[in-house]
Each structure stands twice: as structure tokens, then as C-alpha cells.
Amino acid sequence: MKRFARLNTLSALLLAASLTTGIAHAQLAPSAPAAGAPTQASEARKANIVIIGTGGTIAGAGAAATNTAAYQSAVVPVDKIIASVPEISKIANVKGEQVFQIGSESFNNERLLKLGKRVSELLKQPDVDGIVITHGTDTIEETTYFLNLTLKSDKPVVVVGSMRPGTALGADGALNLYDAVLVASSPESRGKGTLAVLNDEIHTGRDVTKSNTFKIETFRSPFGPLGYVVEGRTLYYRLPARPHTMQTEWDIDKIDKLPEVAVVYAYGNVNPASIDAAVKNGAKAIVYAATGNGSVGDYMVEPLKAARAKGVQIVRASRTGGGVVVRNAEQPDDKYDWLVTDDQLPQKARILMALALTKTNDTKELQKIFWKY
Ligand code: GLU
Image 1 (cartoon, rainbow, N blue to C red):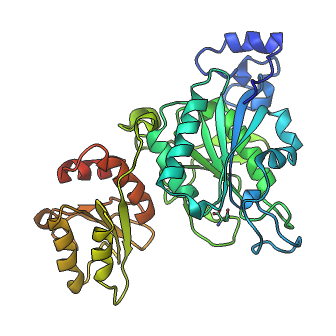
Image 2 (image 1 turned 180 degrees about the vertical axis):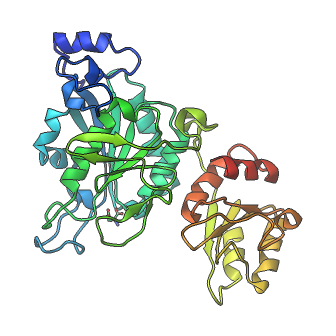
């Protein structure tokens, strides 16, 4: 990757005066807003941001402008996406890097690790102030949570996607990308963990989830977004309560393989053979996306107990999409040596469980990890 352009003299002085953040604060700039006013990255020296392309709808193209939901994803190279938003060059020095060109449903453990390791490498470069990752929206919630738990840096990392391809009427990708660069350039974004930016909102990687198949307001966090991006300003209103990045026990540089964790979805007439299949496929844990508050059908209890007897961890989650699965309520978890997810959705619990298993196989310790993260 090419180095970033040298800073001009004034910018270099401002940078030297701003040792704590690495990015000059707007308050140091001659035209600084009143104390307490939101910071605009463009008022200080421009931050150096690497935009990593991985594919998705933000790199998609349709046959006609009216194709807002039927189109091909992951076809436009990241440099072309960046060039299509010239406003970005006014707020940051950006460089594109294509790591993948895929639909995000094609992410697997290997791709997740490869992306995380590259992001980690870039974050260590002193001339990189932040990272933006363009990504399909389908699994942004998994990638963002994974990076939130494993990156060892305070520098902002922002994952962004779009619900409509750039060719569509009302395309949302250009503004989402602009906002993501703005958030990644903002000193206030440091130390807040991996973030997801879409539809004017900033979400924590821990909580964000996709909630609608086609609407641009698809992303939600059960406790609300951390903030907004409005008219080129990054506005935060709350902080992530759970440990992330620097505060966690995982370091992406030290993880070379993730253990197999299966998610089995519960429904009326769910086939117990799905549990056996997961065990036969080498699952070290099964996240059971159970009904309601983690309830388990009477005919599913024995298959799950049998899997546990073979050493496979059982995690009760909920398919409802919200709320806490209460330990020892719907099922006697202590007696069966099972786990509950706290409030994590099954697909996010899968990420946490895979990471947790790189540290311990002790059920009590694993349960503590679920309560903690
Ligand atoms: N399924 C594709 C993906 O997740 C396109 C969906 C999107 O990005 O909105 O990459």
C-alpha cells in the first residue's frame, strides 16, 4: 500500500500538539467551535483512513435504477466506490485495499481471521488513524462483533454497508461511506470498539443486528445506537457498557483457528438428528436457538444431554431476537451443565462461544464469559 501524503507544516504542528489522540482535535484548529460543540474532522488535519473492500451491496450494481433490491452484489472494486464519493477527499486522506469481493453470507472463520489480521496489521502503522471496512449487510453484525472482541487498538474501526446498490434510485452507499469515513476520522470514536455505521446511525459491534431484508433502516441495537452522523458531524450519546478491543482477553494476532460452533434452530417438529449431525461434524459447542426464553421441547432434551455427555458445550439462546435467556429457568442448566447466552442473538453467541473456547472448556468460566461480553 502506498504511504499517505506528507502533512503540511501547520497540520504537523497541530499533530505534535495532540499527542493523546493521534488526530488533531478541532479545538486546536483556528476555527475551532465553541467548547462542547461537536468536532468536525475536516477542521483539523485530515486523518489517514484505509478503506478495506470486502464486497456486499455497497459494491453492488443493478440492471436498472429501479432495481433497489434485485441486483448483483460484490462487483464494484473499492477504489471505484471511493472515487464515486469525491466529498470524502475533503475530510480524510483515504487509500483503498481490496481484501475480498464477496457477499457477506460467504464469510467463514478463515475469511474472518484473514480480515481481522489485516486490519490489525494496518492499525499498527503509525500513519494509519482509522479503518473503514465496506461489507455486505447480511453478516455485518458477526464481523463487527468479532473485531470488537479481538482487535488490540483504540483507533477507530468502522464497518459500513448499504441496502441499495450504487446504481439504484435512492442509493444509500455513498452517504453511508462518507459517514463511515467521518466516524473513523473523529477523535471521539477512539476507544469505543468496532462500530457499524449505516443510515445516519453509529452502532456498537456488540449489539448491532440486521432486522429487515430490504429497508434502509434495517440496522438496530436493542439499547439504541451510540450516536448519529448528521451534516458531517459525529454525535455520540452513549458508550458501550461491555468490554471490547483493548479490554478483552483475545488478540487477533494470536488466533490462527476458531473451533467449530454450530447453531441449531428450534421450531415445532425440530428434528433431533440436527443435534447429532452437528456433533458428527465436529462441533465443540452447539448454540441452540431455542423458542422463547430458551425453552427446549421435551423430545429435544435427551439429544442435547447426550451431546453434552460427549463433551460438546450446549448454549441456550433465543430465536425471539431480544431479551435475556434466564439461567436455570426454562431448563435446569446447573444440573445439565449447560450454558445460557445472556442477551446475545444466536449468530453473535456463536462468535463469542468460538472465541471463549480458545481460552477454556470449563463451563463455569464459559458462563462468566457470556455474562461479561
Ligand atoms: N447478501 C449480500 C451481502 O450481505 C448483499 C446484501 C447487502 O450487502 O445488503 O453481502
